[in-house]
Length: 147
Image 1: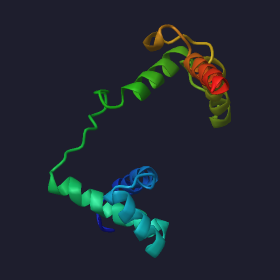
Image 2: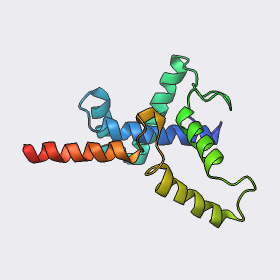
Image 3: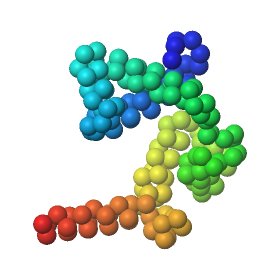
C-alpha cells in the first residue's frame, strides 16, 4: 500500500485494519503474536499500517474483487438502504427542512425516540430494535444472578 492511489480506499483499509488489530490482539495464534511483537517494537500506528500492507498484498495475491454493488443494487448494504428508505418515506417532509440544524434535530429525534423504541420492525417479529436488546440484557442479568 503506497501513498499513490486512492486516498479514500487507503483510509478505509486502515480503518478496517484497526478492527482486525483489535480482534487479533485477543488471539494467541501466529498473527496475534506477530502483531503484539510488532506493536511493542514499532508502536500501534506502524503496526496497523504494516498489517494493512499485509492484508492488501493478500487481496492482490488472490485477486479478490470488491463485493460492493452499484447504487440501487442494495445486496451488500441492504440494512442501511432499507433504513434510509424508511426514514425518507416516513419522516422527512417532501419539501425538506429549513436548515441543517432543524434537519439534524428532527432526524435524531426520529431515530432515537421513534425508530428504535416505538416503530415495530418486521424482521424481528414485530418488535422494536430496543426490545430484543432489553430482553437479552434482562435474561443475562437473571443468569448472572443465579450463578
